Image 1 (cartoon, rainbow, N blue to C red):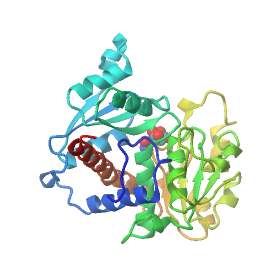
Image 2: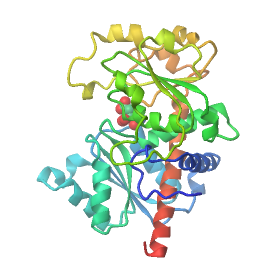
Image 3: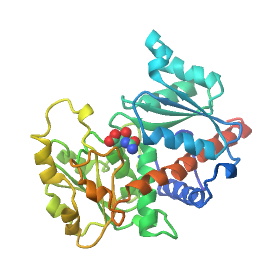
Image 4: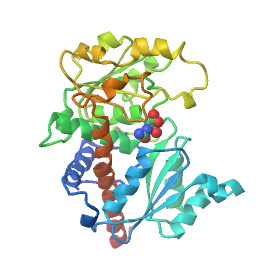
Length: 345
Ligand code: NCD
């Protein structure tokens, strides 16, 4: 746990290389444990994790809840449709209600960027010790997904020592709807911190040129980049030029629900230009892994037979790795909170 100082996990722009190393090392330890319910770890016994999801989720929410249970925490979930939000209660008051019930960690997903950060700030200002973990806010950030993608790639490149060094000098191609993807943004911070070069590929409407400068300056609110030397980010319009020499390829869902204008001529054209298939993957020059954060639009961003090909697709492995990575995050936040409580901080 060397140097871990995060009271909340809100984004990956604030993570140092040591922070990534700490999470990956813990995740690797948790990944090695047997998963049978009888062999839960007692680490978070008596702690309460509350998931506040104001947006739909299949993987993230259940993965967090399973991770918390594997660490013996109590788990509570909130559903906006049956809550007092519909009676006009503010988000902060809703969160404080759960804190009053004893929540130690709030796992928050919201369609507006910065809601988890605002909650963390307001709860701290109110003197609450609860930790906030961002499970996806608008287009901004999805730290646990960025970390599980990093862990999956690190394990692929170096199964025995899946740390940040496993990514150094790798060429990772991210294809598709980068503009609407909080997953791509979190991956950009994580991968470049570990020294990987990232090639972003898609049409200008989904991958604007300015993404090449994405990690060039610390994000608003942060004066310094905690990483001294990052990998490069480049934008490439042609998938046929992006793929040769790639060490891994990640494709993203077309987030139609977040698109305000028509950014594509048709799904068929998109699939022809940017859809991944076995034939396209062969352009990498050798078999390289394929990642997708899910949910997948089969036949749009990738062909179904590629998704189902276990020799290339790491998609199920990403889902599996989500649990130990989220266990690591919950563990670190709970341990930090215990340390703060014991020092009276
Ligand atoms: C993503 C999300 O919600 O940001 N999914 C996920 O958490 N695995 C990506 C998406 O919705 O396409």
